View (cartoon, rainbow, N blue to C red):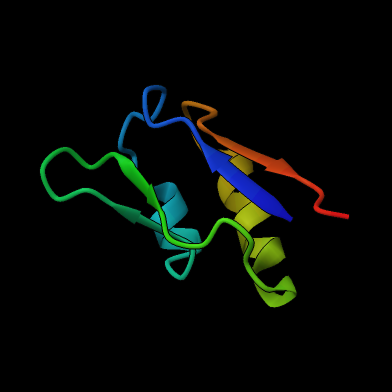
Length: 66
């Protein structure tokens, strides 16, 4: 799995950080998403998929790396 984020679309809701804090963080100054791991291990894929699905701005994109 490869993750990309569109920080321009991000509204800073923080749902991604709550669901997958190993993969996502937020900038202190404005709450915009920060991607910590663009290719997380398999055990985090479920949380990352949920984070992408609940993102209100649809700022998280997922693709297969295989």
